[in-house]
Amino acid sequence: MGATNYSGIRDNHKRGCVGDFLRERINEGSKLSFVSAYFTIYAYEMMRNNLESSDSLRFLFGEPRFVRNIDPEKTDKKAFDIEDSRLQLRNRLEQRRVAADCADWIRRKVKVRSVRYPGFLHGKMYHIDNHGVQEALLGSSNFTVGGLGLGKSGRSNIELNLEVNDNRDRRDLLTWFDEIWADQEVVEDVKAEVLA
Image (tube, rainbow, N blue to C red):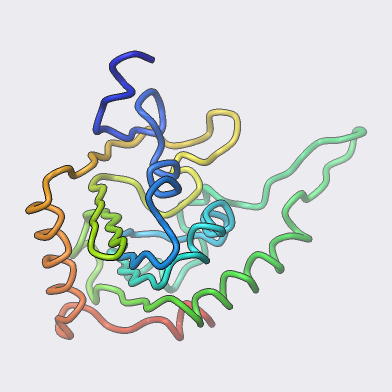
């Protein structure tokens, strides 16, 4: 791939995927702060080991309507495999287990807030604090299998995300996140709704 190995872009295509960025940087005890319009249990499943090893996650939904819908992008719908001339629902047996495991993780390690107004916060951000060493990715990827670039058979979204290399900018991003997270006029706690 040549020069793309040195690119700060993560596009889930030719310049690396967001999921790999997160997997390489989330360590034991990491403190995570994510902004995304969407979250799916299947993305959790693909990132499970890293997320479980983290200390905590503050997840900010940038789209409040998502909390009231299940997978509105329809990107992580139940997948069908055709085998022996019959249609089988591949995810049915695993879906309940994955949902239960994800709910348990959310109860233990995740705080969830959402902006109050549709279309009010559009950005996507993944900020990782590894005991004072910060990493950040800023761009277009939602926390879905396709958004993280973890889909099979080229079914991942082509996204535009940029790794933030400057320490000042990584600190500024976390300060920006903290300001929005604390503003009760802009956001509300939705953890109970997500778990329900």
